[in-house]
Amino acid sequence: MRALFAGSAGRRNSKAAERSLLGLAFALLLSSCGAAGASSETTLPSLPALTSPGTVQVHQDVTNSAGAPAVFNLGSSPNMTLARPLFISKSGFLAGAEINGNQSDIFERTQPLANWNFVGSIPGTVTQLDFDTLDSGFALVGTGIFSTDSLYSTSDGGRRWALVSTGKFVQVHFFNSRSGIALANPASGPGLGAEILITSDGGLSWTREPASELSKVSLFGSNYAGFSFVSTEVGWMAVGGQPSAGSEEKWLFRTVNGGRSWTQIANSPSFSSSETTLRASSGLPMGGYMDQVRFESPSSGYLILAHAGVLKTVDGGINWTGEQLLPGGGHRSTRIADIATATPFGGIAVTEAGSIWNQANSGAVWKKIYPPYRAASVSYSSGKIEISTGKGRVLALGSNSPTPSKVLGNFGANTESVDIVPNGEIVVTSTAIEFSQSENGWTKIPVPGVQQINYGRFLNASVGLIVPGPLSAMLEATLSGGRSWTKIPLPFLPISLDPLSATNWWAIGEVLGPLIPNPYKKNFHTRTYALYYTANAGRS
Image (cartoon, rainbow, N blue to C red; front, side, top):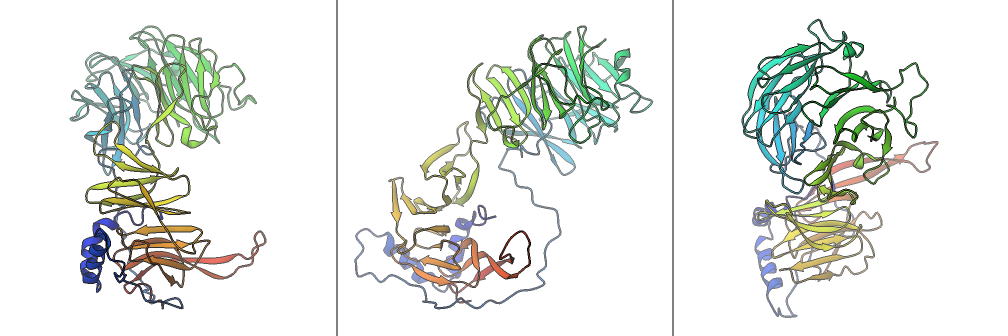
């Protein structure tokens, strides 16, 4: 909330200044402050000196909207933490589906360093995407593994989709626009084995293949089922059983005739077995949920297990060992959800948190390429967007290129916010305020007597508010770009600020309540948070 609260302050600048009682004086101030060689006798505007916190008027019974939550989408980029399913092709392009109301929006990324592009929509919820080329692809649409799923196809990269057929599909894989294979629930119902279906006309009709080896696999409550083929004849199918407390039974099958017959080559212990963890070299473990199967050659492949990491095989799937590919010790931010290690662009991995990583060539270090930053604050004005990241870089974001951001400065982890002002930007850190105008480098704005800054926002090159630390119910306000400051005592601890003019400010504030008995923590107070507004620079 702190990071985004004042993100649109710049858009409100002109109208807010016109409404202000100090509008004319404020305009003269901006002119005098920006003039070269301004006289030292120029009278700086000042705020009223307050010796006690302003009065507070409480608005109760405020009506809140109960409508649907707003959808925020950065142009044509999907919400990657929710964009499932995701498909990584052998040629290195990515396709993702994101639910948007009663339809699924389809996005594509033609190569690892390209932008995401919205290409089209499919009615319903997409459960799987499968492309054999950038233009030719298929999608399963349904609500669950027991539902009747619809198969859609596209021939223009996802811009237009046509309904092909319906059935009890669980997973599909197409070798080209005509030939494909599907795993399906039997017509008699789920839980009674599984069926293999073959098509040679793009999914319009299907032929059931005898698959006695799959009769032992129950798709009732199955968490995952997936195909991976290295040719039109040789492939694997992985199936995860009903999940339970972080574990599930798992089976891996192999075919050498395009899926017409299958041989089980690995499985996990059953729930009755005490062997639930992965040994140094073994078959499949009970721990973790099956998330993806991906073979890159007849011998080398990967299994992605949600909450349990990555397994690798070098003998065609008989034995599996744990593999640590990304840094982070298994934290959600680097836990892999989808992977393709052999594409023309090197390895591509997508994490559970939605970031994309790339390994340029075998043996190289994996590097995160999307998103290229984690925004801590955002400022928007006159069509420009700038952010400060969690690590203190200040970036100006471009419109549409593989490397859209420009680094304006690097201020370290104590960076609080960035604000776009005419011809420049102002960055607030915990130890300083930095001003850059027309890309002529950075200049510090002094704040006399303040050793630490908890938070700050600037409306323009003249008007700014900061919260001095540590934990002070006080503002320091300037109308002169930092040449003079006025202390504004407050009846609350300010957490987030948004100045609209020289006197009109918004804030989120915290008020400590009475002590509450707490056996685990001394001096424990209730805390109340509220939204505050002043039209007279803090007097009320």
